[in-house]
Length: 242
Ligand code: MGP
Ligand code: SAH
Image (cartoon, helix red, strand yellow):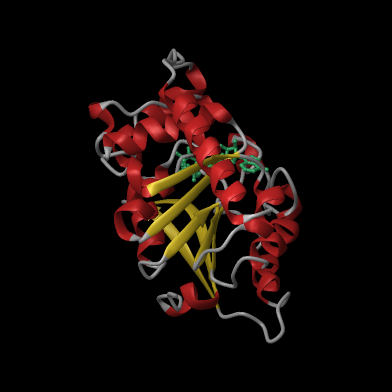
């Protein structure tokens, strides 16, 4: 496709995302499943009271703010692709600390919520929101780092003793990682606290030579919330930024 046609297509898609994001929406009431997450609302978004909006999946999936800040610090200030944006917990922190963010989610409502939440933090202009399938878009994307926080199958992820990577959605962890590797080896994955650590280490062996890897337990205060795996330059502190 010629450059002008591509840029027109991109502009149209940006306008569409903005129009969807600015449509009025009804907030879902806080149901019993959501209540325990609502009680943690300020650790999810310190500016919760300033107009943050969520849906049910957003409540149980959003990355707590201090953890999202740690993730963003590892991206070296360059450009970041957030492949599974949700309600924007990570994308907002990337926008605060990095040069540019592409925030993708397959669910238009999530993009609407993430846009609203980015506005609360005053960073909506630093994020390119895309409604789409990460797996289909990946080959056309460029970035210094990729962040992956895919669905874990809902709060029931806790019921298994050893969370194997085939339980990730919408595809297994190996497939998700391989698609991300087409963009860059600098990959951060946010995974369940009960994830099979041996399998996570195996992901680094998918590259030759194997990628650097660091595995971190991610806490809010003293509560373990998840496991973060840093690959490539993000494991060394920061990726090379172009
Ligand atoms: P949790 O274990 O459901 O909550 O999720 P909590 O309060 O630790 O429960 P406890 O009663 O066991 O102590 C903990 C964190 O994991 C959430 O805040 C999210 O950041 C993350 N998380 C949970 N789920 C179900 C998902 C998911 O499906 N996808 C992603 N990306 N993150 C999730
Ligand atoms: N880190 C996010 C939470 C992500 S939850 C936050 O802090 O808010 C996982 C998200 O992945 C969900 O919003 C879901 O709609 C999205 N998703 C699922 N399949 C996808 C796909 N194929 N491409 C892009 N997004 C997808």
